[in-house]
Amino acid sequence: MAARLQLLDQESMMMNHRRWLSFFSALLLVCFCSSAFAQRGGKAEPGRIEFKRGTNTTTINDEVKNDEEAEYVFVAKKGQRLTIRLTSTPNRSVVFDLKAPDDADLGLEYDANYSFNKILPVSGEYFLVVVRPTSAKGRSGYKLAVTIK
Image (cartoon, rainbow, N blue to C red; front, side):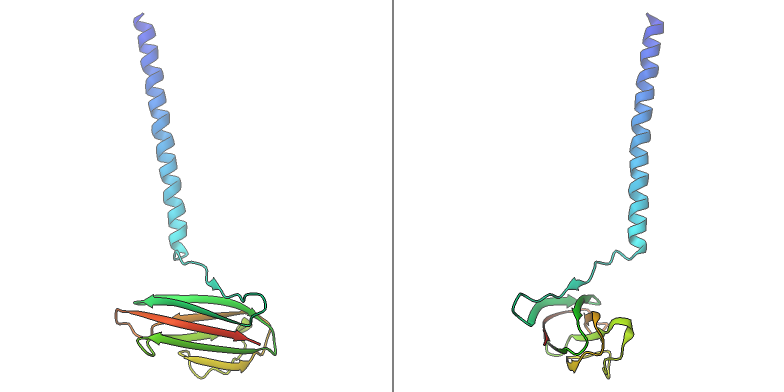
């Protein structure tokens, strides 16, 4: 009987050991996954600007705070006219920068803009970033109107 109790105790200890081993393995897996995520910066994918069927303009109302950036992508074709208008509250507290596929020249004078109206030089995916041009803490609401004709 004592030998049987001793055997049951050993089996119980083995099950506890397996539970702890499973727990620590899962914990280790979570740590590795979160580490890999942190190495990419945890940055979200850019928002995709799309147009409702039959329209060529879309408007985004959002806000950025502190040193946040709002990133967007959209697809356009060579020869189309792109018009971007950015307004913000407080006035002129937000700017944008626009990058063409393969860094094609868009004729932008600055990397801080409030409007853009030009014929596009190449087809592909364009990248637009909205940001507050200051390091001061704060919040800025904005309205971004994008038209492609």
